[in-house]
Structures are given as C-alpha cells and as structure tokens.
Image (tube, rainbow over all chains, first blue to last red; front, side, top):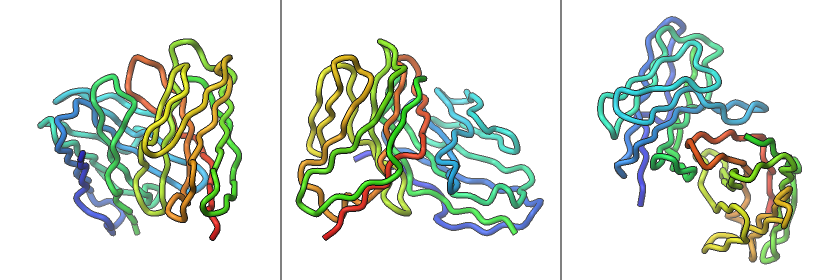
Length: 112
Length: 110
C-alpha cells in the first residue's frame, strides 16, 4: 500500500514564526503536491514538484515556499506564519503523468 | 481543464445503490474523468477514472455518457462508511494536476 505520512496531525504556531510541514511518501513517486483545504473553498493547490529540486507554483503560492531535496520528501515552509494561514494542509503524491494521487492524513495548522 | 458541476448534497439508504451525477459539458477529447472521495477528517481517496468507456473496480462503477458531457459514479451497495464528500474532476492526459471543486456530500442513512 502507498503510504504518505505527514509530520504532525495538529500544530499550533504563533504569528511570525517559521513553520515547516513535512511530507514523506514510500512509493518512489515522482510527483508530490501540497494543498490547503478551507471550508467553502475546497482543496487548493499551493505548490507541486515533478522531481527532486524541482518545484512549480500552484494556484495559491503566496506566503509559502517548498523544498524537495530527496525524492521521497516534500516540505512546505511558511516563512512568517500569519493567521490567514490557519488551515488543513494536505500532501499527496503520484506517479509522473498520473492523476491517481495518494493523500496523507493532513495537518491541521492553527496560527494564533 | 474543463469545469464540473455536481449537486451539493445527496442522501441514500444503506444497502441501496448510490448514483452520483456529474456534469462536464465542456470536456475535451483528451480529458479524463476522475472521482475521489473524502471522509470527514481524512485526506481524499482515489476511487476510479475513465476516458470514454464505462469502468468498474472493487469500489465503484463509472458510467460516462456517449457524448462524454456527463458521468455517474455508482456505489452499488452503499454502507454508512461511504458517507463522504465525492469529487468529480476532469483532467488532461498530460500533466498530473487535479483541480478539486466543492463536490457532493453523500450521506448514507441507516
């Protein structure tokens, strides 16, 4: 079974803190994705990556950056957390060119 | 990618078939129809996808109309565990991005 794990299930941070959300997949997938999910807005793509050290902006990249130093790991970074980044963050992976994405359980981030 | 339209919510009795419709009237020839679901407090889960022909797997069946402008996801014997938000997504054959809409909240009642 494909497994996508995220470093934390729940996280509380203060405004202005630097926040790292980690995602690891164990199926040697080329693609990895970061989404956020908010009530009434659905899932929105923040960043994605097709390969190591490669990244592409999604629909809402502002305020976020990403890092992919190893194929299995994709990190989402909030350089200076703000309250409007309080959300559920979901990581996913897939084979290159494949629409079958495997999602992690999500990290519910609260910024106070 | 083509836009999809789904009902906001649907109800189904346990043990009965759940038929979830999706309209994608602007779909183009190289776009697939994907279905995912999201059970409360979990990440989305892939269900099935198709291009032109009907598809079936252990979870569901996908019926795509001949003109490909709409499709129906069928859960043949719905259980309480099938209560979830179901997303219909149209995706190009190239690239791996998915655009999730609001989906349909399916509630299976005992």
